[in-house]
Image 1 (cartoon, rainbow, N blue to C red):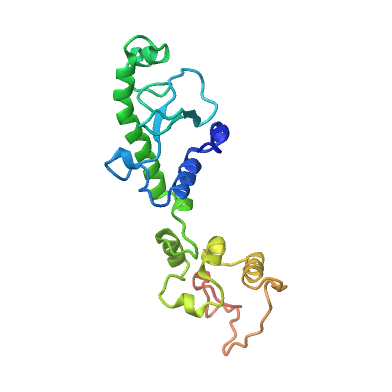
Image 2: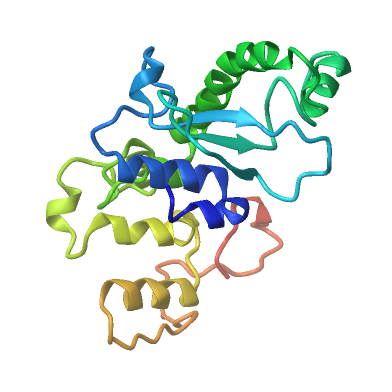
Amino acid sequence: MAQLRPQLPYMNFYRFCQLLEKNHPKAPIIGSGWLLGDEPIRFRPHPGMGFPAGEIRGMDDPEPPRPPAVRVTFMGLYGVESPLPTHYSDDIAQRREGVEATEDFLDIFNHRLIAQYYRIWRKYSYPATFRAGGTDNISQYLLGLAGLGIPGCAAVAAAPLSRFLALLPVMMLPGRSGEGMEALVALLAPGTRATVYHHDPCRIPLSQPLTMSVRQPVSLQHRPVM
């Protein structure tokens, strides 16, 4: 935390929470438990009323036995995004007498609200839930749309199925372009040069050639081959 402190105003909130999880692998996910003592930090809103320049304002020094508090600017029961009457935010911003009790009471809910906000993003964001090899649920759903979600496809394919995730838009098109097929070959076989020839002519003999006739008119409804 001491190393990240100077960079907090420039960091993304979600990225900061992910780094926090990596630094505390044995700790539960932020907001997932009912014991606040198990969580390494507290989330609090910034009491200032100015226009926020970033998602994180900074970090307060820890007050034993409390852990350090990280101030955010996009959510909270006081500050610029407060849904409460303005006198709550005004009293806290101006540090009027007796405001500490009100601030501590609101911070109980502030930490929970901000932590649950991160958990919602963590659950429904594809980059946050992605697992190596495309084994997460969303990747499996996307591979299923391209016909690669059938059990046994990973054993038959000559490359990891996670490589196909970048080419799903190309593979799902009904008519695949030549450039898309070349990109597919280049991804699966690096160093291989592929050339796709468009509209390769092919002669097919017709047993009964169709001709224009007044006695036997032909409609274009069934797309006849001339």
